[in-house]
Length: 317
Image (cartoon, rainbow, N blue to C red; front, side, top):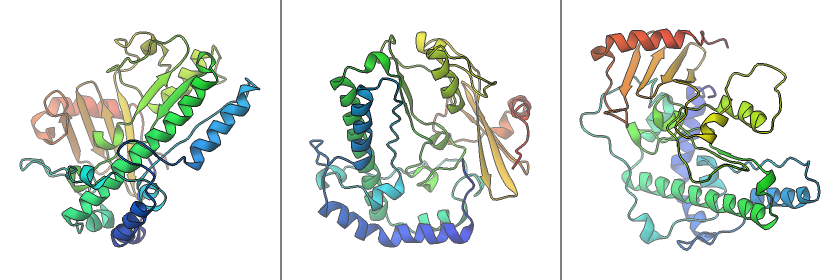
């Protein structure tokens, strides 16, 4: 993940979001292109890649990459649809339970982002959540248009589709509406693969990392990679969802030049260690929302997972 912005930049950005939110949402209403019945305007991005598919129909060697992304900036600045008011009334921001374990500000709520988010009223939170849900719905419609083009031109038998989001997102958990943390909400992201010969509609609990995508596509296409990859092919998992190719996944965030955090996720545990020493440990068997920090209660597990983190080596800027 990228470096967190400096405090001045973060403060300016977060304050602009807060000040411009009502006006942007009003513009969004006036330009409404998405109703509760799923009717949406076509985005320029989806139109561009559908055009690439059309051109690729005549030239099977033409690679087509569809990158349809959404985020806070798109939702407030560019998105042309919204949820109906009656739908939005049912959206309520998440509230942390009273017994949640507090964590350091560098973990979540850091910098002027956290300060600005803390000023949001409940109504502003609700409007922001509505815009976020609307942006997600809009993206879903555009992706559907791209996949419909594959149906139309009967390209599924020679096309590999990899749907991936570059990160997760907090929507109010620990009073945070952003990414760039080492909690599951930020580290976990969508990864869906469709390819010729694979059975659809299957899910797996196998751990995967984005570094696995490259060797997976190469493996599926029968290509030998010209160098050693950081990841591993997911083809065994695609063939058998009960299979596993790794027992841990790793994530890194930075907080400026002097502090960073490294996290390891196993089938049961998430363990985070900060470069200045503090640790966080969460048990996903009993606490999937990572509400209760257990480092002091699980010293042996902290020692074991610290050793695992050391195998990936220190951060080298």
